[in-house]
Image (cartoon, rainbow, N blue to C red; front, top):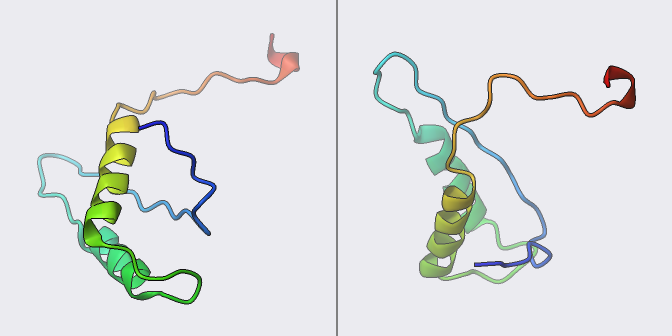
Length: 78
């Protein structure tokens, strides 16, 4: 979608991780989305379709495995 995030007053990360074939618990992300939807202090309410499209774009962008070890970017390590 190539959208800028400048229009957002804040970005909040809520992660979930599921271990050993257990069912994923999405209660924390549901609560965060509900609280964000109900918060109209900074902006006017947005339609649910707009929020869904933004969440879908973020999910597609970051839907990959996290590498077990991040390479160091410090010059001393090279």
